[in-house]
Length: 299
Ligand SMILES: Cc1cc2nc3c(=O)[nH]c(=O)nc-3n(C[C@H](O)[C@H](O)[C@H](O)COP(=O)(O)O)c2cc1C
Image 1 (tube, rainbow, N blue to C red):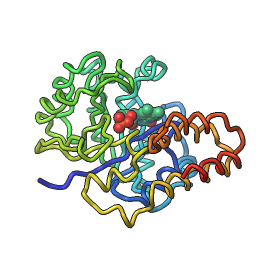
Image 2: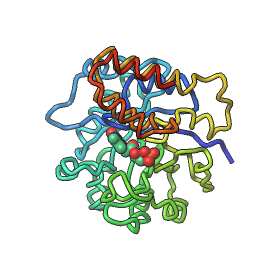
Image 3: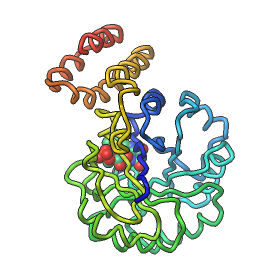
Image 4: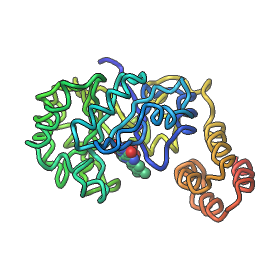
């Protein structure tokens, strides 16, 4: 079986330039997905605005931009700008379950009306310059929707179909429908990627001929070596967890972004014997210098 690829999931509000730069140095991740940008017909950003948005991300990061949209013209316009800026592949977010996104008919809402979804894809794909990757949920209300969703995408040629194997109504918690994925994903004519609660290499063991690989989200924050481990590559030459977490902590401390750091440390803390204590200690700190010093003392 061909080697599976490993992708870093987009995590808006958790992962941006410093995390991407640090994890790309660790290695093991073939692609790193950026959190979504809105593609709305009334406000297509100029190329310079997109370049500025990605300006702190290093050249060593193999970045896949993601767009949130329910409008073919807007999606095509922005995806083609991204292609011209050097991104050969763009991801379409059809999985976001957040209320204000779904109410506007974007994200996972696109999975609710499959005829409309087919028309949208039909209107978009022939005009796209980049390869299209799509990220979906296993269903909106129920995982039983999955085979029908796959059938719609089978009518189009995608770079890949990434499946967060929870329903939209589950949001981000509860068990993923891993077995439903295994039972139905084989019918996808497009290469398929599994996503949902992979926290160690042993969990990346799905055997399907059309499985392209795994997308890892929160599991990569507490274990940045997971990509290397899935690929059975040595981790001794990679930056250690201490170096990884310290580099990111220093970056945010230098910019006084303690709220973001506290979010990340909910996951970093899991690496310590006493995670609740570690997190509680950091949560009360409101001074960047003190935060950084405390982190150094933890290791
Ligand atoms: C805080 C947070 C932000 C997220 N932001 C995005 C996003 O911008 N685009 C997207 O497609 N998914 C987003 N997701 C979903 C993740 O990409 C991923 O599908 C989900 O966390 C399941 O993978 P995991 O169990 O490995 O974390 C987000 C999830 C969380 C928890």
